[in-house]
Image 1 (cartoon, one colour):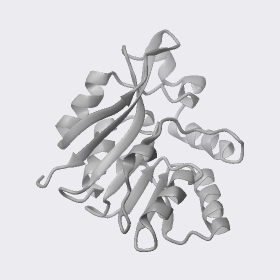
Image 2 (cartoon, helix red, strand yellow):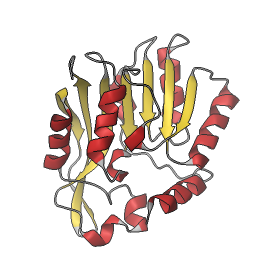
Image 3 (cartoon, rainbow, N blue to C red):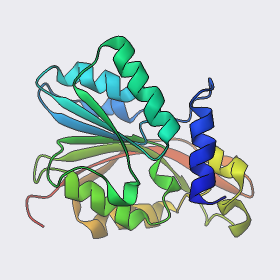
Image 4 (cartoon, one colour):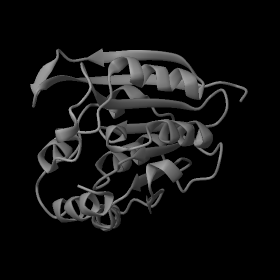
Length: 212
């Protein structure tokens, strides 16, 4: 399944009752009044709207999603609730349409594992975070072994959010190479079966350093 097919699938799902998110990044993120936040893979905007309430009128929240259908749904939800301190942006995670050093807090739920170039995604996360104070809380999935090639483009595996999973070692190594500090795993599930492998749901947090 190529990127265009995934976008079409997600746009259709935006009108269904299906929930694409996994994890609980927002629950651990501790947004503060006045902060600028971003949700990567924001879907219908549920977490964006919750963040907007937490940061208040002096804060602002960006919802980033690749799917036009999800963006439209999120905008309608924000309008319906009268939430004005949000903006939903259609953007690839490898090229996030937010200015550099703009964001205090980034959250994401089960989205980054879909990206083909995860190093570039994490480099973009670092770019848009403010130096020293910018932080992330990300819920995602890693695989205990390399995902077999036959599953990497399988529609069902993609929909279940594990087709693009890397190993824990590779995931954490990417964070270190990009240049994050204070990296910690907040929670981690027991391994569970997916296809011929096992995967783990986890939540990881970190901070952008003051330099670089």
